[in-house]
Image (spheres, helix red, strand yellow):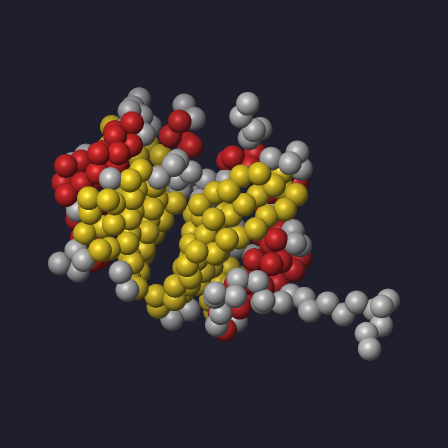
Length: 145
Length: 121
């Protein structure tokens, strides 16, 4: 019998995106779930102490704390998001490529869906490199009349 | 010719503004998508899209291939794209292209990048 006052959440879980699975894929799924929860402290736990993180045209940063620091503007602009994973490839050892459509909702209720592709390089079970290729500008622009 | 060689060839045609040569690498019903713009389907629509998009802002383009990957009928290329702007400035932007092949022709070219700095002047 479950105790109604004690919610034991499976978190982070990997049941989302059931079409895609595997050891590295599950790490990516958990990382995306931390991102979707807008929980930057959980998100940066996936990264190696020395890493390379680049979002679009922004300059790359190289530590988990720098990832957290530079994510604040995005978190301020965004009420929520969903990664629709279209493909994940592992073309060589430790390198994953993830093609997606990412849907964002702003605090004003403005919803945009944007194409995105990530290159993710691992060192053990930590992310050593994440490069995000996309044009995020529509999230920061007011809806067109 | 391997799929990666076809991609290298295709990028060279882009650099020399050889639109007919580029179109010749594509299937008749190919899909081309640049950034957040709607995808164009078919050679005629792709030609119109390429000519209407960013060609007016630039006098030259050069691709610096950082890495490339091939899996099945898909080639992924990571690039630094160097644009020579009308007016003399140069802008370098990160870019990733996904190419999907049907035999030796490209049936989809998806360009993931933020090209907004080209239009910021």
